[in-house]
Image 1: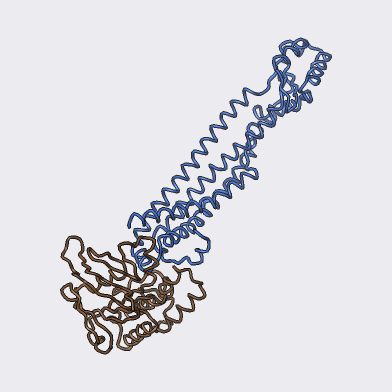
Image 2: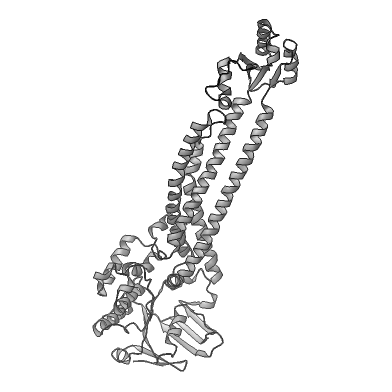
Length: 223
Length: 296
C-alpha cells in the first residue's frame, strides 16, 4: 500500500524559537487509523497543522497524495485541502451563520447542487444528534454541540484524510462513542484517520496504531 | 465571475459594519452621478436642438430709422431677393405679434410693445446643404434698403456652444470623480471587511476554498450592497430631476432653451445602476484577489 501522507526528517520552529518538532519521519498508509498521543504542549496540534497544510516545515519534506508540499503553489493547495477533513480543537465555526450553513460550506465551495447539499447536511446533522439545531448559530450551541457541528463539517465532503484534534474533548461518553464510531465507519470506507487525543482510555479501547509525541520527537506503537 | 455563483453565495461575510455604511455611501454617489449624467445629456440635447433650429436660419433686420424711408415696394423686393437667393428656402416677415412674444421674456407679458420702436424682422430659412455668403447678400439688400443687417446667429451660437461645452466637460469631470471615489471607497471597504473577516477567510481556505471563490463571495456581496445603495440614490434623484424639469418649464418663458432629459438621457440615468453594480463587483473581486495573493 502507498503512503497517502509521508514526513521525512521534518522539523518545525515558530520564528526564532526552539524547534518544537524534531526529525519527524513517518508514513500513513491509505485507509489506516492512527491515534496521536502526547501531553499538552507536546506539539500535537502543530503536527496536525503541518498535515493539513496550514503550516510549512522549517526543514524536511512532507508528501501528501504523492506531492511534495514545497512544490505546491497557491492554486493547487485548495484541491488538496478539499481531500483533508479537519476537526479543530477550538472548532473554528463561523459564528454568524447557522449550523446547517457551517456544515454545508465544504460542499458549497465544490458548487454541488443545493438539493444534494441539503440532503447530505440534514442527514449528517441528524446523525450527530443536531436535527433540531440546524438553524441555530454556533454561539447559541453548547461546546459539545459545536464540536459535533465541527465534526459534521469535517466529514461531510467524504475526505480522503480526516484529522481530528481532541474530537471527544467536550462531549459526554455516549456522544464520544458515536463520534468514534463515525470515524471508524469512515475509515472502513477508505478514509485515513488521525485522531489527536490525550484520552488514553480512548486509545486502549481501540485496536489502532498510535503515535506518541514527546519532547518534539515521535514514537510509534502498534496494536 | 459567473452568475451561477450567486446560487452558491453563502452568508459567511455578512456580519460586518461595511454592510451598513457602504449602501449609504453608494446612494450618495449614485445621487450625484445621476445629476451629473443628466446634466451631460441635457446639455447634449440642448446643443442639438439649438444647432438644428438656429444654424438653418438667418435673421434680417430693417433698422427703425429706415422704416419711415422705405416703401412697401422695396420691402417686397427685399423679400423677393431673399426668397430667390440660391440656398434660401423661404423668407417671411415676422409679424408684430410674434416680435412681441419674442420680447415677452424681457419686457413681461403685459408690456405694451405697440408703441415701442421695433425694427422690421425677416426670418429666412436656409437650405441645410447650402452655404450662404452673408456679406454678398447684405450688399445686395443694402442697395434696396440702406443699413439693413443680416445675422446668421453664428457669433451668438458659438459663444453659447462654448458655454455648453464647458458645462459638459465639467459634468463629465464630476462623473469621473464620482466613479474614482466609488472605486476607492469600495477598495477600502473591502479591505476593512477582509480584516474583520480574517478568521472566516482562514476557515474557508482551510476547507479548500480557492481565492477566486472567496473573491466571488465578496463581489456578490458588493453587488447586493451596490443594488441597495444604487436604488436608494435613484429613488431620490429621479423625482428630483422630474421636479427640476417641471420648474424649468414653468420659469423659462422662452429665455433659455428647454432643459429636459430625452429618451437617451433617461436610458443613461437608468444605466447608472448596472454600472455601479459592475464597478462594485469588479472592484471588490480584484481587491480581494490582490490582497489574498499578497498574503501568500
